[in-house]
Length: 299
Image 1 (cartoon, rainbow, N blue to C red):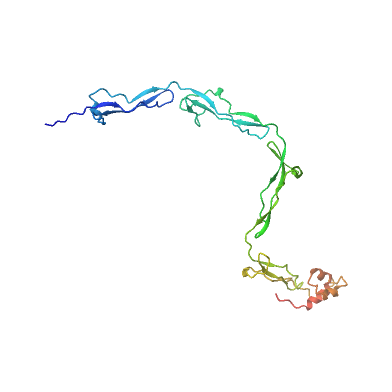
Image 2 (image 1 turned 45 degrees about the horizontal axis):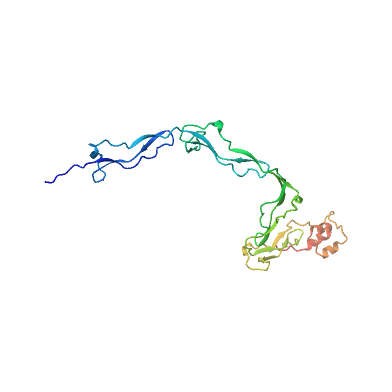
């Protein structure tokens, strides 16, 4: 008759000991231990209970006493000053048995619970010199200003100054000190937005009357970007060609204070110059008679 034999299990070490969990001092190390049957397959640990005891899968390890020491990098090859006395720097760290000092750990060696001796800390900076400073001059340029033209071609301007430099000291000096150097341009061409056709007008003409309401006129034209006549200007933006002026009432009759003070007043009247305030005052009586006879201009 058939029968079922019990599996014969035994303990097998599946891996070597791992590294110690710490770099110094006492820690733990581990390895893989499993129960396998006659065919080499892993079986329940109960199958190995009747045999030899299970080998340990974890044990203590001792990496020796923890030590700390100061370590430093090479000096930075660059001096902080272009001339005169400056500073060179390097990194200084406290290392504990292979572990670097982390931020915020002060003078303590990382992971060791110990400290590097503060008194023996190497310096992290030293003085350096690239020779005495000599005074030099150079042109300095300001930012470019706005374009002189809202549209089309224009120019931009910027300030150009001569500056003397001695070490880290800068001073504005006479442009003659930089005359041996090529001067940067103070002007450059610029291009504004594309020009649109716009309305242009002449100055207002003199008022047609010195009192009792007159009229001023002017010429209004639509011009393109190249200053030629155009018909593409917005009609609603067209400036007015006529406006009222001198609306104050005229004196009814010349009084004793209203006199002609020039022998040329007949010529002033004939040349129709009474519309100008100067001639109205100089030839008060003659101009007053003219204004009495002049009909009011329509506005």
